[in-house]
Length: 256
Length: 263
Image: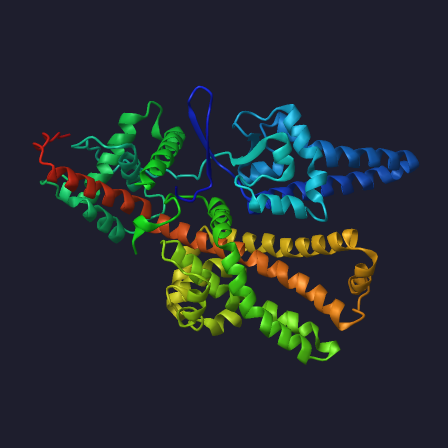
C-alpha cells in the first residue's frame, strides 16, 4: 500500500468512498484566518460599545463568548462544514463517513477545542493531528469528524479545441484512461520535450501508422473525455470521478 | 530513477496536500531522523554551552538554530533514499556524509538561511547539486505555484515550535513535584538561576526543534517531489510503462492481434 493522504471508507451498501484528509498546516492557517476575523470583530464592537458604559461592557462579554464558542459551530453547521477560514483554504469538516456534518458533531468538536488547546496554544491538538492517521485532533475523535479538501487536488482545464479526438485502438483500463486524460490536460505544464519522451514510452503499442505519438495520445484523451462524460468536460465533475477512480485502482495496482 | 519503486502514491496534488503527505512520510522514519539529528547537534550544543560564559550562553542555542539547514541535510538524504525503497539506516546515513554535507552549504547557511522556502528548495542543491544560476533557474521553475505554500509551511511550523515549547514548559510546571519545579524556577525568572536549570530549559527547546525537524524536512521534500510529479508527468510515465509491460507480456502468451479500430 503506497503512502497517501486519501482516506477510504466502505459504506454498508458496499460503496467505496474516498476523500483527501487535511493535515496540520492548512488547518492551522484556516484557524488563523478565523481567529483574525474574530479578533477584528471583537475590537470593532469593543470600540462601538465603549460608549455605553457598564451595559456596553456586559454586552461585549456576551459577544466575546458567542464569538469564541458559537462562531465555528454555527458556520460549520449552516455553511456545509466551512467557516470563513476553512472556505478560503478550500477545506471542510464532515462526519467521518464523509456525510454532511451533524449539529451534535459540530457542537462536540468545537466544545472540545478546550481539550485540544491544552496545555497551551493547541499543543495536544497539534500533536494529535501529527500522529493520527487521518490528521484528527481530539475534538475530531470525540465528535467522529474529519477535515477534508472540499475539491480534490485541482486540475485546471485547458483549451482542447486544437486537438482532434481519436478513438483508442484497444480497451483501456481505468488508470490508463486517467493517464491519457492527464496527458491531454497537461496540468503541470509539462514541457513539449518531456511530453514527447513520455509518449515514446508507449510508442511500440500504438498503431503502427502513428506519425505523432503526442498528438495521438492527446487525441485519445480528448476522445475519452468526450466519450465518458455526460456533462461538458469543463465542469470538473469528470476530473473528480476520474481522480477517485484512479486513486482506487492505483492502490490495488501498487501491491503487485 | 525507478519510478515504480516510489513509496508514495504518484498523483498530482495541490501544494497543501503535498505538505500533508510530508507529515505522513515523516512518521515511519521519525525515530531514525531524530536520532541522526540529535547525534549531530547535541555534542556541538553541549560543547558550546559549557565552554561559553554565562552571559554568552544563549549563543549555543543560537548557533544550533542557525545551523539547522546543515542538520536537516541527513534527514533529506534519508527521505530521498527511502522514497525509492533504498534503505538508509542510522549508520548508513551518517557514514555517507560526503553525499549530503558539502554541496551548496555556504549559501544555505548565509544568504539563503532566512529564505522562507528553504525546505522545498534544499533538494535542489543537496540532491541535484545545482549552484548559482542553475539553482535560481530550478528554484524559479519548481517554485512557481508552490513556494508560497513552502513559505506558509515554515510560518506554521516555526510557530508550533514555540507552541510546543510553551506546552512542554507548562506541563512541567503543572505536574512536576515541588522539589523538581524549584529547579525550573529559571523559566519564570528572566535569568536562569543556575547552570542546570538553564541547561534543562535549553534542552527542552532543543528536543522540540529536533522532534519537529523530520516533519518540516519531509513536507518540504514532498512539495519538491509533488511539483516534479506534476512538471514531469511521473504519474503518466508510471502508467505508460506498466501498460507497455502488460501488452508485451500479453504478446508472449501469443494471441491473435486484435483488429485495429480507427477513428
